[in-house]
Length: 164
Image (tube, rainbow, N blue to C red; front, side, top):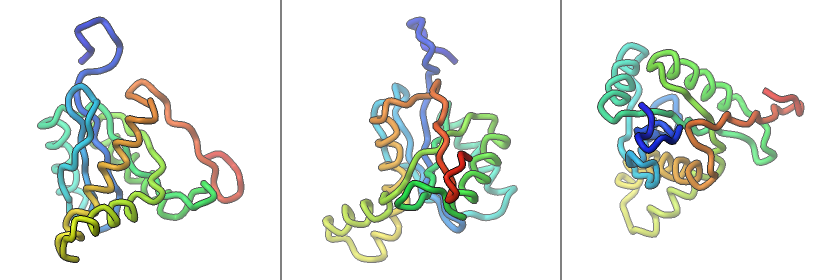
């Protein structure tokens, strides 16, 4: 679906995922892709149930782009977790038919934890919110970067300095 004003920006929402092997935080924009809000904390249940969840989310929320947080080292080189996040992103794109891009997620979980700690929440409540707040931070940073649906993701370098 295209913007009715003649622009090329697809109308719909962008969703960000703070990738994890057990649970994932999900954040989403408004339809105009201006504001990022935390949406859900998804606990992984297996490929079939995961596929059902993300396909349903894509349709219900009119997702036009997925942004998967890419965990990289301080140096900017990719890690084993980066490979896992990229594998998940490839699966997500194939499963939902919606483009996936990756965005540096360094410090997002720590930043989310710091914000929640300032709110004087209990450990249990912080844990329940941390990943979806991290996803919101990833998505807000992505929006502020000026990258959009039409932008191609920039390659990162692996530990050897080669582009991936």
